[in-house]
Amino acid sequence: MLSPELKLGIIGYPLEHTLSPVLHQTLMTELGIAGNYQVFETPPDTLAQQLTTLATGGYRGVNITIPHKVAVIPFLKQLSPEAQLVQAVNTIVFGDNGWVGHNTDVIGFSHSLPARMREALPQTHVLILGAGGSARAVLTALIQAQTAQITLAIRSPEKAQAITSVFEAVKAHTQAPTLLQIKPLATLSTLTPYQLVVNTTPVGMAPQTEHSPLAADLVQTLPPNGFVYDLIYRPATTTLMRQCAQQNILTQNGLDMLLYQGVASFRYWSCQEIPGPIIEKARTRLQQHTSTSTG
Ligand code: NAP
Image (cartoon, rainbow, N blue to C red; front, side, top):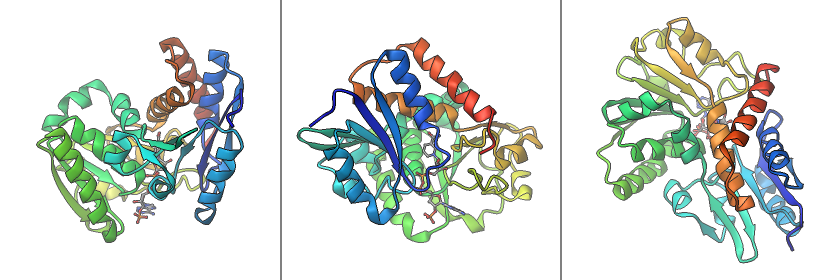
């Protein structure tokens, strides 16, 4: 039975540094929608139980984040075409006819890329660090944008098969010319071939803000026109971004991706469009929260 209030939340583990509540509370307030967005720290062995509790407790839906985006799939009745392709879910709608999984990280990432970077993707070689849920979304968005070449640098070789399957499915679906190479993260010896580097690992995320997924001497091998996109948004400037600044390499954090994926999730739950000025207000609120906090 759905509640007249819009009851929403986020499931992940750990979750103490998420800014999703700030975003969704702002959207509800600005749109005049009564409701709330709560944080549910959920260790992997309690995922199924947590979903059932929320679905039977009148929740309209939840965001799913690290480390559950792939693990949640078996519990869902249906996947949107995008989530089916990516094989990762960051948004669930608890409907009367079952739980439906969506992936709004794909649109969140592609909307947040600077226009000049997006336009150059057909001539760009991109390095993605990581092979988890968000790496799948980034890979999908890049293939959809006809990126020339992608190299995935991954920690666990056993993840290569699953992410290659995602690559092949998206490539076949979009008829893109994208080439893929997968290599162990530990064997990366130069970044010179890559015009865009995307960090999809949590390395550097609060509270362990002193870490970087790349050694400082490796960052020094980036080409001068390189661009580094760190999906982390807390802290607003990660150690990786600071290493790049020392080389005058342009960077971006994950705040705009958070904004655009969240707006897309909220559309699924509220069934309404969100006007541009309200999206801008939400961005300002998020910026206030990242700039006043290191973690
Ligand atoms: P995930 O599914 O758990 O994947 C994390 C990936 O990072 C895995 O491939 C993991 O390797 C790798 N990894 C973890 N620790 C590592 C280390 N010490 N060295 C090398 N690789 C490591 O998580 P996710 O959902 O993709 O999220 C990852 C990050 O992206 C988080 O910081 C999250 O906050 C951020 N994110 C931001 C947005 C946004 O809107 N800005 C959206 C999505 C995610 P293994 O495969 O070996 O475990």
